Amino acid sequence: MSIEYWPIVIYGLEVKQSMFDAYKMAELIGLGSDEDGIVEDDDINFHEFLDELTYKPGYEYLTWVDSAEMDGGIYFGMPAGYPWQFDSNIVYKNLTAEKVKADILNLLKPYLKEGIDVKALEKKIDYYEAVGCA
Image (cartoon, rainbow, N blue to C red; front, side, top):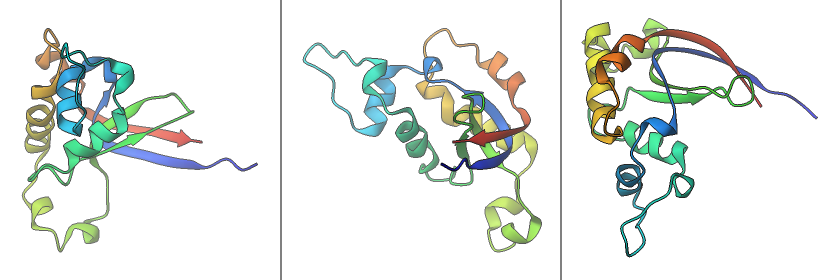
């Protein structure tokens, strides 16, 4: 039996499925609802939802990472990297912390549950360092 570890270094925030509206998530990942329009959180593959967010044009530089068995946190944002990794990608050259923060909020906002405080989320966007394990 082996254990795998991975570093998590990201500018973004920790996200939880409970922050998001199940029906809106289901629409994004192409899940239908029952005849009453009901979608349960258990019906949603949260990782698939996060993948779909990162495929949206203009937001491809954003990603998510799951710490799995370490603390269970899932982080969404821009991963750290070395400058030479981004030289060929013009998107990275024009990014600032403010732009990344705005993009994260603009991308997540349409899927949040009603009543989620977007200003409070904005304050949570920061640099995160953690370790994942499985």
